Amino acid sequence: MRAGTLLIALLLIGSFIPLTSGAGEKPLVVTSIAPLAAIVQDAFGDSVEVVYIIPLGADPHEYQLTASQIELLRQADIIVTTGGHLPVEKKIAELKAEGTITGEALFIDDYKANGFRYLKEHWYNEKDNPHGIWLDPYNALAIAQATEKALEKADPHNAELYRKGFECFNERVITIVESYRAILTENLTAIIQMPSNQYALEWLGITAVASIKPEEEVPALGVDELVEKAAEADLIVYGHESPEQLTDAAKELAVKSRKSPAEITVFWKDRPYTEVLIENSAAVIKALEEKPPEKLAEARTDVTRYVVVSIIVGLVLGTALGVILKK
Image (cartoon, rainbow, N blue to C red; front, side, top):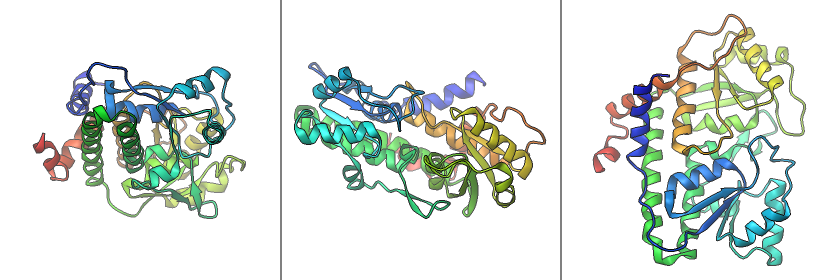
């Protein structure tokens, strides 16, 4: 990875970091998973204290609250969930209803009021896909805006600070979105490894038409079952932190279908949301441009130049120039 080009990308992100809050105790925002913490921290910076509940690497569909985490939730000013479908989030809803939690807990209706949308699982009876919702930048903005409104309510003295933080985050995300959308053509398709991958693609105009693992409760499909469909798609997408067996299946499918694989990040911690958004988008564009693999190998290579070049191309085309000029 070239340090110079990485620095350019980080400077592009860093030029929009919100101001820190003044003196006084910061609102405590507790999120169910680490990527939601990344959204809140990226939007509001040092004006809030952010912690997450489910450790990275733990299965969020199996994790249960500990006694110390329940105490943490009792102290929280704002609680940010993925919408409410995880067991931890269902327990949070119960604790809120019984009065154990007094802070404002944000669920799917709060996000829908700010533009959130579920994608349909085209491969699984067109049901709403609750997995990986944060990977869609528009959903990230809906989550951030709902959080901003809750922060204003909890700490009206610093309302203007939170509004500016969200506005800055919004401009930053939209700049990235418009830049990448200007690069890709419409009507592209992909085979994904798991349902969560869908949210990293469809805002780019790439439809996920099949999934190696269709749903949490459904066994993974065999590679040979998907080769014909994959041959008609434009790329294969998988998450680098996924189970090894599923990752191997995605790579094997790429070889057999003669399609390039794109490795994205679904779960992460301690990194800005916008940084991961850029990297995921760049990895997808790189896969669309490169030659398909002839044998099984590590698929991820340096995508930094795609991060920088694709953003610059978008800016030259004028898709985000107005936002930059306003700064």
